[in-house]
Length: 379
Image (cartoon, rainbow, N blue to C red; front, side, top):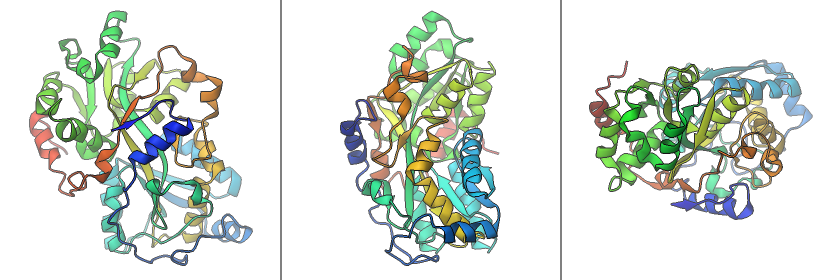
């Protein structure tokens, strides 16, 4: 378990990244794509920009919030004159869609972003990931990349969110002082929304933490208490958060910092906090080996992992950037949610799952167990 104190500090960053050491162990390296294996690119050059512009619009498969990502990619378009078509989905369904398309020779995605890097070895073995080393990725620690294959954009945190208009002061006190077990209180019956682990990536991570890593402390008994609330179950966290903002529920779990901070800046009636341990997930990104717009894909990967690209992301939300030379300027200035008395950084991150072979099991055996407990049938 990784301790975290003031997550933009040097000490905290070393702690977080140390906890991620070894993620890339066991991955194969397949030389696909146009870049020379093992050789860094020349970066964002006039030649690359010209070639990318000649190709036209990019197609971006991603799992991050659509509104946030649309604003972020709009900055790329404004800078380089290249439109981006955003296609969002939960990590596992989106990854499966891309793999199925690639296997039948239907090449649509130029860039693929998901929240579970343990999925990529299969795609790499099948030759679907381009070998490409963007310039400047020496600023990204080894624990947040497999060189030439995938790179983390950032690390996101998950906690609990509540609607301030649907909760009383007493309920907020109970919820924020009781850790994860506070959600099992009977007062949340019928007022709680959650997301199926089959959505993938961060959602599977969340349930894996309770059902496997900390099963002695939580386990199925904890999960069954949540199921007794008869929550509305969504196939995507974003849908759950949208309905919570609309007042249909009082609380939801898996509250990702990136989405919560965007909702906060829009004026939504949300507050969020991070019980200990706090599950965390990196957003990781690859260039598709058969990208229809290969130059555009490489340009986008260069920009994504540049200081400029990561600072642009921080204009709309808050995450831990993967580059060790980028920090959130709002934190130092105590602006927005950082200045709110109710806000606190997470103090303990759960990241060990990324080195756990059982987590990487493609069968995802916890899903049918969870489905049975909640009486849930996926569509």
